Image (cartoon, rainbow, N blue to C red; front, side, top):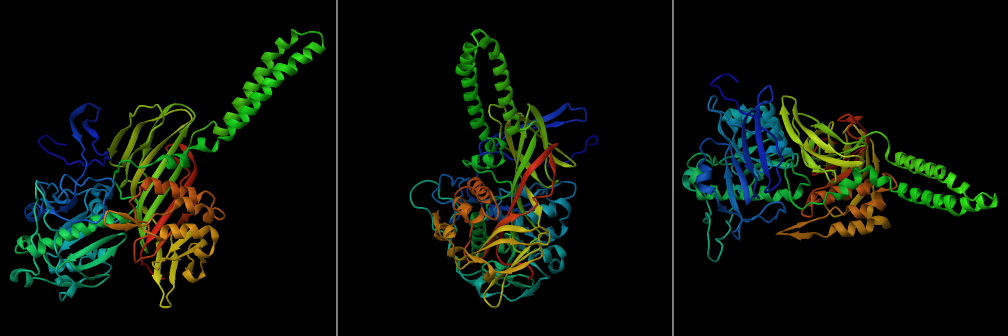
Length: 603
């Protein structure tokens, strides 16, 4: 950095709620240039990220009362009885005038919805564009205000909505009234209460427009399309500019859009970058810890000790007595002890091994037909001696943090960011213990796994992921499920050809369990029922049921695994992610699970 110049550096750090963080800048020699301490608090309410240098939306909607149905376990609702809408803004580069946006999808984790004008979207490129697209396909919501007619033909917008966009008339759903939440009763801070507005003001009504093309459909906000697990809304109005910025009808719609985005969090198992409190990672540790598979060594060692006690004691002394030399038994004791010790050590080495190794457990979530999906990787490392590991992200767009430390170890890991991405250094690994690293990002899925509705009423699944899918369960929106032992790469199967899960005794309990929703806030969520899946999956995919149970426990109890109205396919991709080593350790287990949601792709 030249004298008098400045540079903007974005560091991808995952911080637990109420955690502390120290950021230090070092020069080329490693000397500290500056440091800054940051602290994290519990996030409150619903967050709208307005990509505007001067936000008129913030002036009209910040701390507005909203009424989300979903209650996220990792976020607080504040002191008020009704959560509030928080409007945030990015920093801007004083030299270029461009917004400084996240360069990784996971860095959008705090935002429920992103509001942006199409001229700003058209200027995005590189890592910032990839991050925004990754945020949406991972379940985020993007609201776009059309700024210029030429933006409708931009390839970025066409990619997000599935085709070129054209202006159309205003659809009836856009004009329907949305009733804002009432002001909370009682004393205390009332917040920014939105007053009812049955229709737009004449000035706004003249500017309203609908949009058509691609996957767009009419909605309460204008026109909307799914992109992966997320949504893209082309607004019928521009809330970032007058007259809509001050119009009560338009403000109610922006607040409701953010509320809907917050409620959609329930349908995402792992939102990239999100840190929730109180989750149970012990099942994940058991899946990745080789010690869990070496319990037999304890039993064998106990048997060897019993044999040693018998041979070195009664048998040894009885033999010496018969020979008339009772003291000879004492001379044999060291030999018996050495043999027993060597045998027990050998059993331990056979059970635990003499070299370090790694295990991976990965979940990829994607919309049907998408070539990429949100990924969470749990990477376990098991070493025979104490050492400090350096663990890199799988690609430059990922974020990484320690999920489970080795017992009795001090946390000394450091996050280092350079041009090649992020890496954890000084990760403490103790002998014969497993340390687990969590990584969030975006993972490829070949040409995707398509789910389309057939005119006959069947659901067609086409696997173009580049790998066979094993132990596949297709949940159909009607509440039935079909099982496929294997769907080969390039193969298309019909729901009619699958095994009816309800017709098998091992599947009846699971189906009855997941069919009934469980209330979380104002929403019904459906559990995965991983503990009941094992009898169904074990014959074709050993250990897959336990892996799904570990993922379910790590995700928490507020996830709707089977959203209403859409099919869901989940299973295991054979071959893992294709890596043979991780951080210098051999990968002995690489299990990749997938969850495909909705309709999409080509049959």
